[in-house]
Length: 307
Image 1 (cartoon, rainbow, N blue to C red):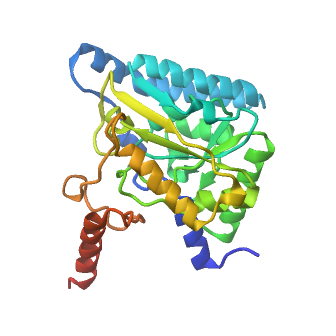
Image 2 (cartoon, helix red, strand yellow):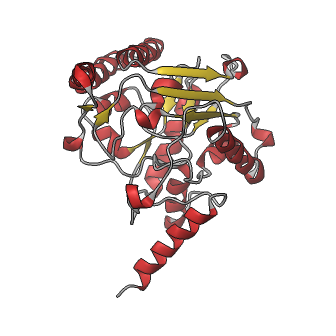
């Protein structure tokens, strides 16, 4: 039994994905200040494209272990090149012999540089637009990262869950950005990670990520900054038999309390007057941020009511 068309749209919304990728020709990096930043910005595009193609070539040989090694090495080289300071706590909570549904907070593509520090073989659930990016797209396809299709059908939902099943059958863990957006910490979690954990019987690993939005502000700006701090706090895993909507919601609250608390890099905050209202895109504001939630609701009503 597969969902009806309305159910398919709910399924896609629940799984989440980046919602605001501009055309690939707008994908660019601009140095922030100084010669070093401009030099790294000039290298960023070729490195991304070249590394993606190289890893895709290895993935085409079927060597999954080597692909994961290259992914981690790429993340470390990129981290050094950008002089990032990634401070990590909670790594001792990760069982290298387990598979997880890894659920990080989401601020941008630099999130992957931190997440790939986790000692697990990872696949990332990615929106279909990313598969059209130069370098990144061929890598995502060949390395068999599951794709969320923009216009879902019964067939696309079947394909998605089949791809997720292949991830776990291959011994990997799956990264799901439950917010489905890089707008800010106020964006509510969708429930796709909860459904995946139940369906495939793997625990959720909550990962609090903050500060990565400072590295590269895409899609708001092409600015690339060096020497930024990213904080990663891994929280205790939640077994699938302990998961329900209530515990999933409490997990979200716990993650955001850590993100907004002391000792971590400041998280990205969503300010519509600065970032835009993103009309036509699917996202919800966490009820705990009542003032912003009300502002978004008022804005959406005004658009409906305006002649």
